[in-house]
Length: 330
Ligand code: NAP
Image 1 (cartoon, rainbow, N blue to C red):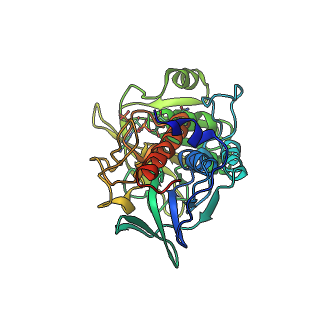
Image 2: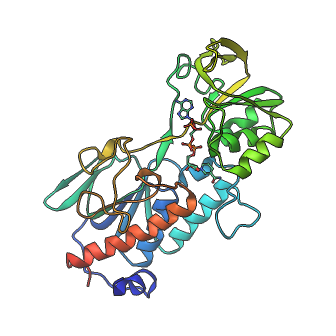
């Protein structure tokens, strides 16, 4: 590790070479745990940095009722509270942020250009931390009834479904967590999973299996979401015997994973078959020089808040090395 591993990231403020107007050392795209951690580290390193986020700061943490596996919070912490702390922390060190949608990203003369609503910013380096969006089932009725009984976020919408019978589709951590959360409001929650083995972590599985309001429909896929103005149920196919049944539900929560937000980056950096950014594990460098990827948007084994913040820190470490090699730092 170079000297910057300590001094650059945690040392006292340094005066940097003046950058031309509007030229930045670093633009961070995305304000989830990875982006905000990168912002914190970059601001502490006194980089000329801007973080751009199109929605609310915090990313998917915002839609998590309670984060139980982020160290330092033995009782767990509500996702929105953790997101707020991340944001406050970065801003306390002077991170500048902008709430705008990035329209286009491209490279010209060794600089990266980021087009926002009505103007374009130039930067020597980028950290892509745009996260992911909920995957859709892609069945009839899903799009039409979205927001009318079809939801992708129990934390956001659960309270609208008091006393209802609800379905949660999926078998991962999100599905089981969301199902358990929904038992606060629902009469009963059915987890509909395409296999007969959950992917979720054992502790969550135990909680779901032991909960009296949670039941399972195994080996089952949804063929259609039923309802005119409001979702009223699903057409479900049993994959073992091929039978198709209509089952009534007052709400259907779809939690079948996420897709990376990388549409903007096609052609700029290498993506894998699933659309995740391919980045070097040791540096988080992408295929484009000076562009680094952090958090859920990149190809990685474990997508958690804890790994996202690690990515944010490492990406800035690599940015500093890149800028230093280009003699852009004093
Ligand atoms: P995930 O782990 O990818 O699980 C997705 C689930 O949806 C799987 O059970 C999968 O079935 C199912 N599925 C996928 N496509 C489907 C389709 N078209 N039709 C029906 N079912 C489909 O996604 P996730 O639960 O959102 O979790 C994402 C990441 O975040 C994971 O790494 C997870 O560990 C992490 N996470 C962690 C926590 C926590 O630590 N507390 C909480 C939430 C999420 P198969 O199993 O058959 O593939």
